[in-house]
Length: 172
Image (cartoon, rainbow, N blue to C red; front, side):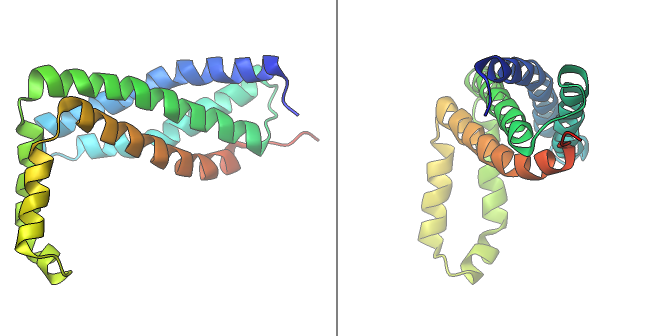
């Protein structure tokens, strides 16, 4: 059973490490928007589980004397993803609201137009595809931010399972 002091400590460390993760995501997003064909943004995004595992092992070794259960490791990782998703969504909202002016939506719509033959082979009609493209271009900055926030949180919860499994250490 987890004590309230341990839970407060876990959330405090998760918030601190979420700032590092959100900075990684912001730099990754900036690289993807400035250089869409470059691989640096994707590589930075792929570094996410390694950053979380590294910070989790630091939390385990420095704050918990080298012992952490799977449940606590999962909670730490999930909270880190949750807090980072909130900070990243705020940064994305600022970008979409003040800097983007529809460029990102046009990029996504252009990608969908290029993939129209693939969508048609999978059973979608041209009218469905064009309706989806027009709906994407009409998303507001807050909607874009919310979509990415939820995506990051769901992927984070799923990624927390193997991260916690790798980083847990039981007491002897």
